[in-house]
Length: 286
Image 1 (cartoon, rainbow, N blue to C red):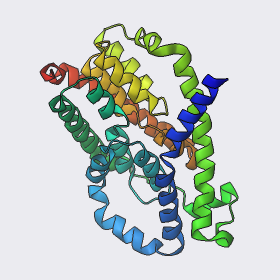
Image 2: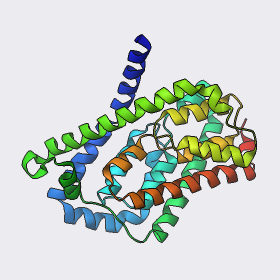
Image 3: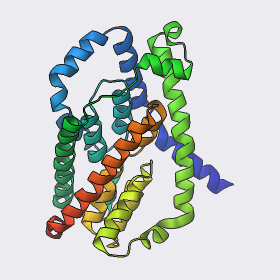
Image 4: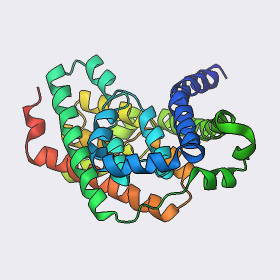
């Protein structure tokens, strides 16, 4: 019982960290819908092309809240799909802390971050070129689906309503994910990697799809322990976007677009890590 309580407390506090990001995101979306929709659209039209670069830079910050925020912003039509992809690909979660605590040199961490930045930015720009249809739902449509009566509650109450619902959803899924990781154990997960480069990258990418910050911790620790290569870790970390995928699934009702986006995310992560190893970039790390 004590172990269960400890697990719940850990997951609750970890999930609580993204609440400010979610709340600010929904306040922005509510304000954009009711107060400045035309101005926002004109601003995005002027600066949207630089979105993937900005998104990739913001995603590098050692947190997992911005990926969750960007999922809401894309679903509300504030940012492009390429910007969303760039944020997801560059998101670092707990990677930096784990690598530093594992004795990985700062130079190596900077190489990894710069690689993620380049891959995320290039992939984001390319996706914006080929993803012609920006299929998104307005916050008004989302409010109708959620039944929050935003027109009566005002901007802040409506944003708080959406934030609480997303928080509960993420908390429940995160509890399930952490429980599975505890049952399998990092040693058990490490046994999935056979040392074959392509297969190792593929499995790491699948691990990266786990919608929780725990995925980045596991991948980084496996790299520090020498179980996987830098490229395999890169594949998993590129795909891993923390709770961003959970928010995307929860707030976007176009499941076809979500599936297509996840497939693109997975493909870029897998190939990015594979190329990282094939070019020998991982070999220059200490």
